[in-house]
Length: 141
Image (cartoon, rainbow, N blue to C red):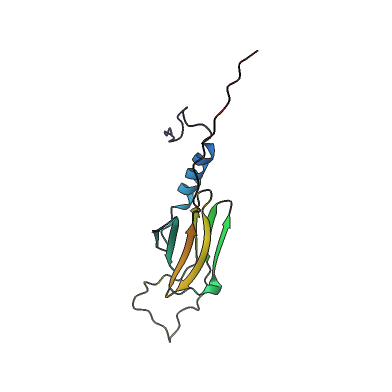
């Protein structure tokens, strides 16, 4: 299979790390459970909201490692439906999950709050200042 890579231009120097980030993001984006929103809250703040109905704070974990935010929800095995439980429709997922997000350099997790079946993870990007510096030119010899 021959595919064109986005960062193969000779004018993009040192973007090997970005290419590997895109490849990692492609691997972790396959699953769609649980659904989530990403909201720009202004002033460098981002809110990630996951619909985690049925999960308590003790069954959820939020970790950051090597610029990857990982959110895991673990479910205890449910007892099999017995004579006292007969589902006519079962639309609420009863499975655990692992959801990953790649974070840009400098983006930090500020807080995680679980309320009304929604897990909100607040991220903040500190303001950066533009840097400009002259590069001296030496003559050979």
